[in-house]
Length: 89
Image (cartoon, rainbow, N blue to C red; front, side, top):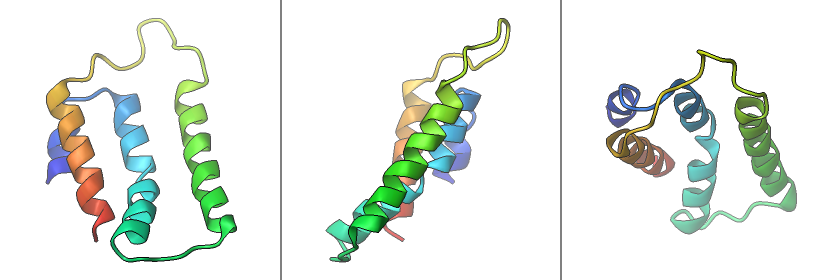
């Protein structure tokens, strides 16, 4: 519910970035809470996928008249909450 609420208050690029990088909190919570020990390959995969998503979303120059508006603190709070809660599952 938090992610759906957040989508109303953040720009489209932020929505895509937030939805695409869910593996980071899941990975971190698995280490911190679950005590998982993963090999270096898993760390590399998480970093590579996250970097690719960021570059894909923000690497191209913005087109005039396109792009997202300003992100509200309310929306960013809910996206953060959603990612945190998703990481705990």
